[in-house]
Image 1 (tube, rainbow, N blue to C red):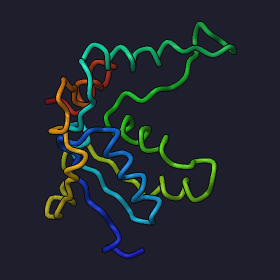
Image 2 (cartoon, helix red, strand yellow):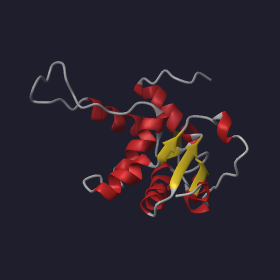
Image 3 (cartoon, one colour):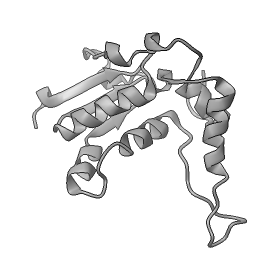
Image 4 (spheres, rainbow, N blue to C red):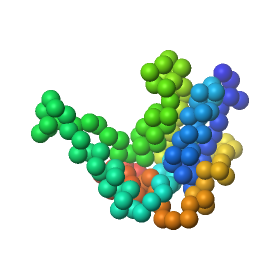
Length: 150
C-alpha cells in the first residue's frame, strides 16, 4: 500500500454508525483510514436515552467476581468510535484483524495532518436527522472521560 491508498476523513457532523460502516468497508478494501475530529460525530436520539443506554453496559458484571470486576467499556471518543468500527469487521478472521490495524482515529486535528484534504460523506451527515442528537464528546463526558479539556 502506498500513501495514495490512505483516506482522510473529518468526522465533524457525521452520524457515528453510518460513518463507522463506511470506514469499515474502506478498511476491508485495503485502504488506510485516518479519522479526525471524532469527538464531533453525533449519535441520534434524546440525550438522556443515549447516555442511559451506554451506562447500562457498565452495569454488566462477570460471574467470576461480580463485586469487583465487569466488562471493560470504552469511555473516550476515540475508543467509542474504534469499538463501533470493530463491531462491523470480521475480527475472527485475519482479514478483519489486519483491516482494524489500518485504522487511525484522533480527537481534534493532529498537526501532522493539518495540510491534508479531508473527505466528508453527505450520506452520513447529521442533516439527515429530523430529531435530537448528542455528540460523542458529550456522551464521553457523561461516561466519565476527562481528557482533552475544552
